[in-house]
Amino acid sequence: MDQPADHRTEIRDFLASRRAKITPEEVGLPTSGRRRVPGLRREEVAVLAGVSTEWYTRLEKGHISGVSEDVIEAVARALQLDEDERTYLFDLARAAKPAHRRPTRRKDVPIPPGVRWMLDSMTMGSASVQNGRQDVVADNPLARSLFAPLFDSATTDKRGRANFARYIFLDPGSQHFFVDWDKAAGTTAALLRAEAGREPHDKALRDLIGDLSTLSPEFRARWAAHDVRIHHAGIKRLRHPEVGPLELTYHSLALPLPGRAVHDLTIYTAEPGTPSEDRLKLLTSLAATRPPAAGSSQDRE
Image (cartoon, rainbow, N blue to C red; front, top):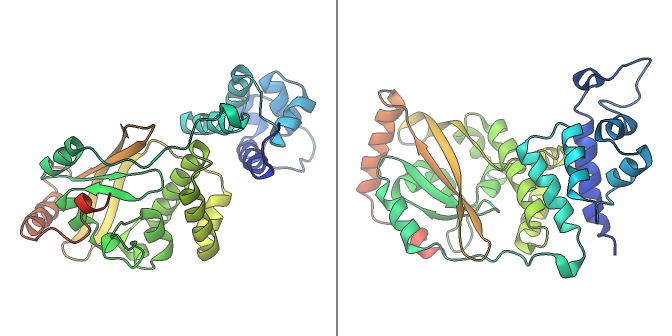
């Protein structure tokens, strides 16, 4: 049994978008005459992957069910996919398997007490845990102070659960809070794209993507790019309403949990000796003097 048409569309658009990014010169292929399409032609990808043009054309039309891992790996190499994109392609192939071979959808699970204790012990760093839908499911006091505009946003749900994707794309204030808003928006859409590959049967995720696609032209444009991110780290610049500009280093780490759940632990710190460190210390002091907010991480599961 073949996979649904919407899944075939995801595969088609992803492969076509990656193919369009590579020039013949980059892969050592000769060029001659005018080219009607950007990037590589299908037959050129087929040559690089060691398969027939007819076979690759069928694959790019979304018929990936039953394709061997060796062939998928060859296509990934031909398209010069990075690690995250390669993982996403294999996730799409896995989701295309017949229903009786598909893994069950991951369930939301409570954050273990040990993880909460770990977050609370990080007094000089903002620490939070996000699920694949970008819901903040646990945090420490500094994270709530650092991302106060996110937690105070009207985009939080009735339980007080904040969601980075809803905040970035649906709250106009996010464009002031995130100095590099365009980069933050692109990364967020790419993280959701990766999660959609891992969990194609997650109704809450589909609803979130549907809402963002309906309400945000900015999200629609980035979703159509088919960019994928799984591992992310770097510099984040913020305009904080209480302490002013901050330039922070952040790292996100996979946090495996029971029941196939995998969340990201994200930690923000400031470089020692910088004005951002002084401002983060001030924010830490302010956070320590405030009572726990309603809807804190202990209440959101």
